[in-house]
Length: 263
Image 1 (cartoon, rainbow, N blue to C red):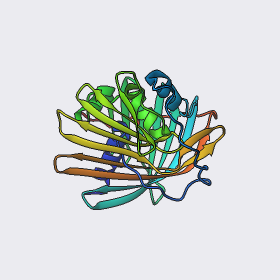
Image 2 (cartoon, rainbow, N blue to C red):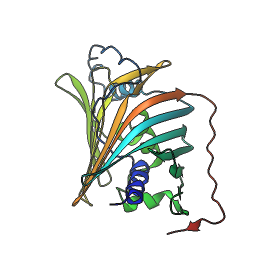
Image 3 (cartoon, rainbow, N blue to C red):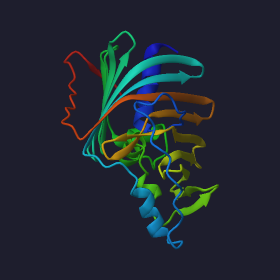
Image 4 (cartoon, rainbow, N blue to C red):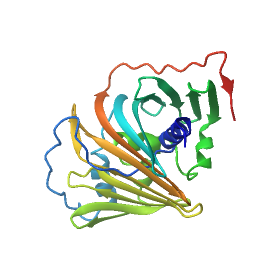
C-alpha cells in the first residue's frame, strides 16, 4: 500500500477512534499507583460516579504525538497534532517524517472534513459517514473521550453492569449492536475499551499505558489503535510527546481553490 493509502487509514482511524495500547516512554514520570477503591455499598450509581470523577476535565486540549501505522504489515511513521474544543470540534494535522503536512481533518458532532494535501483533494461529509467503517453507535463524544483517556458517556450508565475483577473495576454491556467491556486500572482510570459490533463482526480494542499528571488531571502517555474487520487489520500506535490543557487554540481549515471535492 502506498503512503497516501495509509494516510487515508490514519484519518479514518482518527475519525472512528478505535484502539489498543502499550506503555511507552511517558511525557513525564507516571503517577504513583493509588490503592483500589472498594464499591460504595454496592450502589451502582455511586460507583459509576466514582469512576467518572477520575475523568480529566477540559475546555481545550492540544496533543502532539509520534504515530506508527501498521496496515497488514506495511508500516509508516508520522507526527500527529490533535486539538480539541470540548463537545465542539476535533482538529487533526498529520505530518510525514520529512516535515510535510499530508492531511488535515476537522471533526464536529455533525460533520467530517478531510483535506488531502498530497493529492489536492478534500472530503466533506456528515459525521455518519464514519459509520461506513465502524458501528453506528460511534459518535463524537466517544471519539473525544478516547483521545482524552476518559470514560465513554454511553457506556457509563445504569444500564451497564459494573463489577470488580481481580481487584480492578470493569463495566460491560451493550449499546445498540455494540457490545463493550471497559477495564480500569488501580487508579480508576480506563486501561482498556473492548468493543465488538455484533452485526458487522468488527472487533476493536482501546487500551492505555501509564498516566501522567496534567495540571490537576490524569492524562494517558500513549495510545495504540487496533481494528479488525474481516481480513482487514489496522494498528496505530500513538505516543503522546506533549499535552497542553485549557490554552487558547486555533482550528484552521481552509481548502485551496484548486482542490477537488471527492465522494
